[in-house]
Image (cartoon, rainbow, N blue to C red; front, side, top):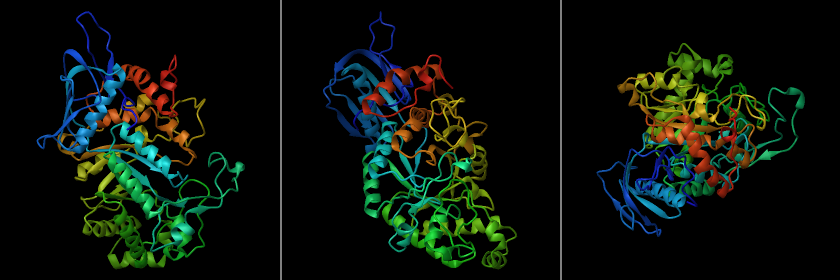
Length: 493
């Protein structure tokens, strides 16, 4: 960790004489409780760390009343977050740390951010930088989007053409995908991560107490895989790795048992690489038109006694879930997996607003809230879009991200199934990491605040002022590109 003060200040900790009124120290996310005492100590960098199994796994207590601060955590992760908080305080006070007793634990066990490396491929060092930014915001789940219509990005040794063919597209759309007249750039775009590189990312993230959740899309967004192995589609092709953005009709054939065997073979290697509990299987934006016309799919429907093609998607999801469960893993899928029925053990990631997540939680499924309304950080940050690079559309400013209430209109029983929240960074229009940083920061700080303190946030104006005073200098010190719209006078929203 290069520095700690990068996180948003949601509360102010002060070392004041009775005459002083101005707060001097900011830390984020807002701790559960802070007790202030008179006096301060010069921080030397030395700390005492202790484990206390009575604390939650990510819970910590930071005591700075002695010259050597004491950090007690429920695990190594809790101690890590305590060090992050101490570093924030020390950097802002020049090392003169006020005497405080801080008790803290996160609201959610799942605090995620997703990076799409398919629409545009990002080198390993950029992926590591994304993880660094996550760690500095006390997030703990890196959702790595690895397969798409526009490129397959993970080496699967059993199926080498997934990368030799599926990782390369011959061109990329110029301008917005609706601007048909602008055409394509004619430049080949490719790249993939070897299994050793994936393991390197897993280890790098683990050092920062971040779990990697890989996403292998099924049954839709499969054009790159079909280009490599056309027999996996309904028509047999020919298929190609797609140069444009959007939703495409050719998806994995639900009627061929060879498709299930293929997916299981891919997941065998994925599970060997990624040791985390969850595997994301996508499930979104899968048109079923080909299935309606496919003899194999219709025969499978008849065999299983199904009345709709939506049930065929559930057949794939449930079959793959059973396979992964037998390997000790759990699935996450986008909220479309609810269509046609899904097992109660599947975790639903709600992206089309919060509605799907609320419905899934009411059914008893665990939910990660990732609504496009609040946490799709590829959206524009201002209504005018002036000064912003080309984007997919939408309007999601810092205020909107900060305002999300994951528990809105939910009773206590349903609330228990909301396991976390996540920001998503889709990269159709984000071709380099400077642009990625611009879209993430400072909106990721708002997500962090919600993730740690869903119901304990301060007012928005105070939030922005603390970001400006505390975070912006740290972004600049780290060389990050960030959006300054909220800090202008007047703010641009």
